[in-house]
Length: 116
Length: 113
Image 1 (cartoon, rainbow over the protein chains, first blue to last red):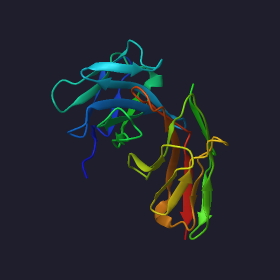
Image 2: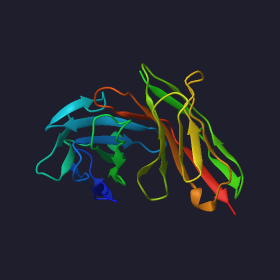
Image 3: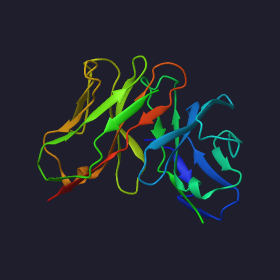
Image 4: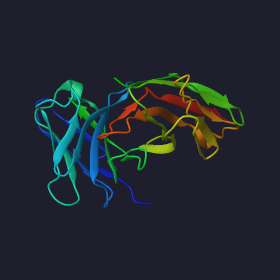
């Protein structure tokens, strides 16, 4: 079964540095998402992306965050200047159709981001 | 806004015991409801879903029924196995627009032999 792949599985970065998290969605999917889960807290929506633009973003997704689909396969999340509170597990997801009820989102295994 | 409330756990059961994980939700409109499971070291996997009132989602012996009158979507399994040990997330999504998924806190289930 096709799956969403994320790299790296664990990223350790100094505070203030830029970090790029990478995701390869399922090949025929058109809608892409990032979520994050701070340790012990809920999985939270960050952003959705379709047709090379952001569809929706949460209040967490401020100017320090950006997303990009640089080629036909990768979907990246960039944090420009990392803060300690950015330490979390970041999940990428993709779906074929906009109606989640018809085609649920498929999630990757996540990237654990640790900010020192 | 949308929200999901579920029991925090951890829940510890003996093998073959009956499992219930409670989940209630608050949503505008008529959401779709999901249970996701996260096995140790893995990502989030869709376990089951229901898209309208009284629908019953089922998979791998797990069931949950969409109860609109009580805004609930409780997860049940008649006889748990050690391999069911995981974290279970109740979630919902609106049916219009670009649907972000709203998750509950997750309930850790540990099944002991």
